[in-house]
Image (cartoon, rainbow, N blue to C red):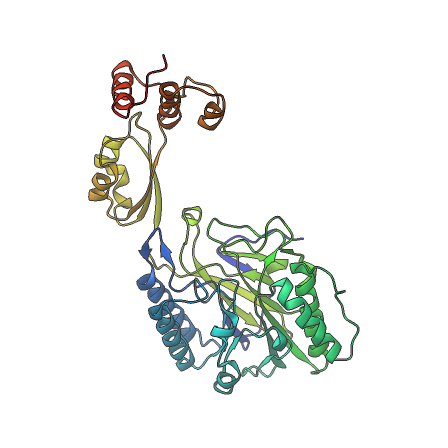
Length: 417
């Protein structure tokens, strides 16, 4: 299996000047918050940039590979933004294919799928329609591009549907009636797609899917599909297609010389992504189905920064000036946590959203954790001192111990020493 490709670009093979052009994006997560702060205005800016690219690059097809919204019942302003995005993308002259991801309600996002198809907009949520492609005839004298949108396949739901679909086609079921894995349903769906594509004559094939390909690099902002590794899908499930546009993983990455790829999110959705370059993929497919991909940075949204240091230094050090407009995670190294630390830090870093107290070079003198101390029958004062040590990374001083004794006495707890 190939390793994920690096930015800024993936080149499979050279293409002729005339080629079908696809814009691959995914995981918009419209309506998402970042530690309580709305991202909608930045998502709007990302969509503006996508529309600019689709128009300027004369894109034939825009692909949105799932997780259109951040939750199954999205807020009204997120729905309005998505509707507006579809209209504006359609106005560029491009056709649009979107699929439901694991965050989406398949029935809700695809409620008008069959009607919208007549206008060149496909929003696929129905697993039973995964073998029904959008047919694209770009002005490059090549064969039709058959685009197969495969919505997120929840194994327990998609498995029986695909088996019935296989039976309907008069073929032997590829998956036995047992507990389905993500690989099982994905491989079954793509087997059916290959079979249908073969009946179309000469075509170039694109599959759009929302899944976790084995070898992909995760971030902290994805929702796990399952517990353990049974959500992984082997690359072999996508053999034989000219291009596979994937969603679910939030980092841009590619396999098999760019033939199978994730575009990643248009914005960072966790601090694990603060060094990622958020981008989309512009794919040129020649008349033989060979692809050349350019990874185009979007350059929108507020950056993320993690700052580590002492409280007083963070407030004045010019080294941190570039973080003043960023969303900030602060790791304070002071032995004692200053009073009102976060509000005071936010005077300099207005978008600071996380404060971690991580004292440098101090280890609690006690041994074991507080839970084990409770189970050992330790007395109230000793438990309190143990908790203090675990919290602050050092034993309480004599004056601090005196305050703790007074506090226990005030609650009527007897000193057990």
